[in-house]
Length: 158
Image 1 (cartoon, rainbow, N blue to C red):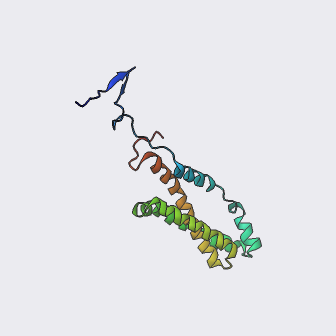
Image 2: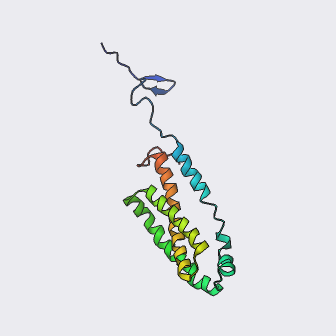
């Protein structure tokens, strides 16, 4: 015959049969991918060029303060508004990982245009790329939450 296991109670807690599906609730563990996402989220906070952007654009690149304040920097504000609104829906349509990779590419474009861009148009494009990269930063936290808690959010103790 087949031996059947019955759940029993131990000190007020129910224990299940060994090997049964309900023996222990499945709780996702942090694996290497989650550690990589955490490391990326930590490193994303280091933005050494931001405090020095205006002096860099005026002193090194030769743009006037008026051009920087009126023609270059406002582009980032409006582009950020668009990208922050669209980042979530785009991640839902494609995937969070895709948005993260595109955002990382936009950050590389930002750095490249800062180094090699020469015109106001290049600097405006740099601001748009920066806004897209900044909007993708939020998706890193959403990706980590999805990895740790599952897609339905069940089991999160946050």
